[in-house]
Amino acid sequence: MINNIDSFNLYLFNQGKLEKAYDIFGAHLVKDEQGNIKGTIFRVYAPNAKIVSVIGDFNNWDSRVNTLNRIDNENGIFELYLENVREWDKYKYMIVTKNDETIFKSDPYAFFSDNRPETCSKVYDIEGYIWHDKEYLDRRKNSDLIHEPLNIYEMNIGSWMNKPDGSFNKYNELPKLLIPYLKDMGFNAVEFMPLGEFPLDESWGYQGTGYYSITSRYGVPKDFMYLVDELHKANIKVIVDWVPGHISKDPHGLYNFDGSHLYEFDDEFKRENVEWGTANLDLSKGTTKSFLLSNAMFYLEYYHVDGFRLDAVSNIYYYLGNSNYGVNEGGVEFLKNLNYMIKSYDKNVIISAEDSTTFPNVTKKVEDGGVGFDFKWNMGWMNDTLKYFSKDPIYRKYHHNNITFGLVYAFSERFILPLSHDEVVHGKGSLIDKMPGDYWQKFANFRALIGLMYTHPGKKLLFMGGEFAQFHEWKDKAELDWFLLQYPKHSEAKRFVRDMSKVYLYHKALYAGDDDYNSFKWIDADNRDQSVFIYERKYQDELIIVVLNLTPNAYPVYKIGVPTNGTYTEIINSDKDVYGGSNLYNGLPLQAKKESKHNQEYSIDIVLAPLSITVLKKEEE
Image: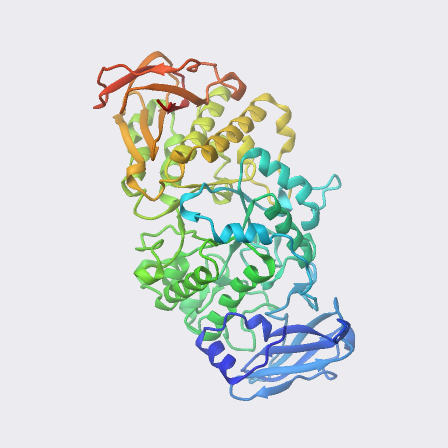
């Protein structure tokens, strides 16, 4: 649909409150009553331009042929209808600025773009895909996001699994490969790294130029719609990594769009993100806010996504991400407006913040004085936990608090526990490579780490390759090292991740109380010398006991306190031989004794394996 540019829409646009700017701006095909394409209408916002022309296949790229009309002198909106322009035609805008500089730009609202290294926009018919996920979306609206399990598989489409010739699998080819894999592994959500068009592969999509243009690397927009549709049929959530804080400085992109800093900060200090080589967007500008709010709505309306992971939120809270430079009030207000808009659309759309700061009330509702996110990435837990696990077990007793400290603040916000792509790049080593010890111990440590994540309060996120303990860091130019699965230790590690995922999904005590501090209780948090941690997870009548032994010492009989009398059954043990362990586990039900231990009234004697996690469930009477 092409909305008219009336005074009300212009007011909303300038105030940063227009939620569907994509219906006004961009290249829209015009059809007759039978659906036949008659032509294309181009609209672009360029208030600092003297002249705007559209150039493309249809006029031999001659800027003299099709000059847009300035239909609104005050706001700088240009428009032109061309009858001879059809779907797939390439185009750009030629802009003569007020300083008489001539620049060539892609369309900020283009629905599709040419494949890199080309930088043209493409006319595309975004309408007409027939969705089959109404039942799924109805269920989503009536679900309980906060108290349901969320097990996210983070992935980069281009380096997950390639064709035999090394080329990418396309969006419409992924379902037959990805969906069975996610279902088998127990992931109920997939998070795609940024999919807006971007010129440089090495930026992984975090330096984008086409916010409305799903990257052409993997197919066309309707192919991506098909991928989402098929994932929804399999009851798998789709989360997109989204970058609203900074942009690529490539000359064809948003940066310096009409010869002025139209979307980014005018102030050079606030604008130039030297560390990343990008430009920071000014989220206090009405037009920038409307552009981004509309982009989020576009993903919801046209791609039916289930959520957003917002990248580099600290760079939005504070100027240049540095609290010493002060709070960016415009940025914070934008986040509140964004989250309120999304929650008004559907309260069960997931909004998570990649946030390493202590900014307050991140996951508190906007109407209650918060920023309005559903979840915050728990970067503190990730850093402390990986630091602990990288230590030789003989030294872990000196770092015991790295595991226990996270529970001090675990319920201050609603968290996602991220073992993400950021932890397996730039020389940091893969998860398995971070683990100390010999080959056997590395895998035992890896399994214990995975078990800790799945039993600790917070939703879960694991980056691709982590599930089968890939030794190499993530290589963005090649597919995952799938060949490793021919080796027992890797296939066994994958089996443990799969089984641990399903234990998490099945037991409410491990997820339903993530926002309630009563759902977690330490039984023994102070055994530094043995590096043993014991805690309970509880929800309603379900009680789970977790025991971590993070040294290579084994204990044929280890007494642990339990809160109630009854029978306790081991539901998973990372030391079983099917996971590559030494097969020390508790095969028979364990009856509690009236014998106090760890300040608990009852106790049980368990077999405690080396470098392991043991998960027990109290059976119903």
